[in-house]
Image (cartoon, rainbow, N blue to C red; front, side, top):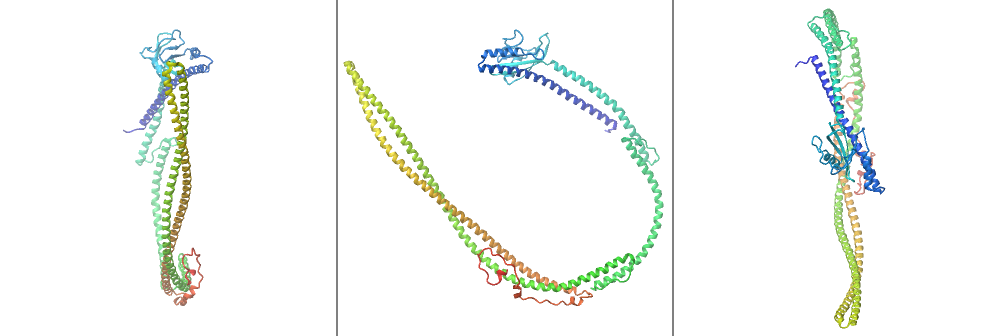
Length: 636
């Protein structure tokens, strides 16, 4: 579908209307939630105040200043007298729905558990359930105090557990609905007014945009058809239409300028043709000068390619080529000086190469000798390292055995300690048994006395107490046997105690001996551990030394190879120097042509002279290898 600007404006206005309607709906929804939340907060505050009153009187009852019934009565009177919002009040129920406190006469003492509102809802049960669940709201329908009309009501209730009371309060909420609908009607009125205002403003705005656009579209079609004399409207207007008109005016002026430039282009082409002919004549003259200069410089380069560095361009040339002639002469002069310096340097290089070759040969022999010594050192270090490793392994085995002996000794010490504890417990138990035997002996003594008294009384009774006297005699005999048995047991326990004390002393001595053994074994284990650690450290150190020696051997081998490479490189460099001398000899200079062609050979120094040159001495690392007796090691 093609969306024109009026349609786009209509969509924009419709979107604005929808967003405005949505914003008002959200605002009304928030207003409804806010007024309900305010009413709920008021109910919660009233119930909290009533519970605070009950808690205050309960604290007095707990302190003993008033009795619990008196505290409950005072709390009931205080809550019954509370009013808010003019006529709203609070009431109190128990957990069974019995009305305990109510400001209206005749309501207190009534059972309300089965009461229903006009819709059949058991509101009392819900109020009690919400209160016992921690507090909550109960909506229901109720009749106002004056009249028979029913209205929606909202109650809030909380339970006071110490007294098992439910405190509740409620208010009618039909005024909240009225407030909401009033705000809704006002918002709808504003919405209609805003939509009408948007429509009234949008129509002229749309016309003010579409009409100039139609006119500008017609003008642009005329310009596209080549009618550059058409009048552009709205030029100078200070808005987007004016900017568009200014742009179209620029297009128009550009088209007129194009026509003017096309007329001037023919005149310019004729002028350029004349200038082109003049430049062609000048180019022919310059071409002759260039051919003459090229021929002259070609001769100079020909002599230069044959090695003649004395060539110069002395013939004058055209002014534009005079700088090139000067640069050619300067370059050849600089090249002549450079070649002369190279000729002088070739002799010095030959002399230095001879010395380098001699020194490299001496260094190669000394490096080979050092490599042989290092190989012997590495082999000896390997044997020493193996012996130290065997020592470390033996120390580890000794350490393991010492740890095992230490563990066994510690276990023996623990067993002896437990044996001492057990003997001590036996000794204490024997003492307790001795005490018990003493009590039994005392009981037997008392029984004997009682039996004796009973026999005396039976003798006094005559024939009537004869049977009792026999029984008393038997009891006395039993008491005597019990006393004798107790004495024997006591003697045995005393003997056992003596033996136990002897065993405790022996076990204690054994424990001390084991403690000393444990200490000695621990000391021996520490010593063996120290020996094993030092042996391992020595083995590690020897391995490091062997590794370092092996590395030195490898480095020495590499040095020997590098010396051989240096000797070969020196020989190659000598050959290259000869080639360079031969190449330089083909150049002819004004000063040193004969000397560069036949350079004087430098005298090669003898090996003895090379060995006497000062060489930096190395600081020895360790006295592990014999010193080299011949010049080699110290001078290397």
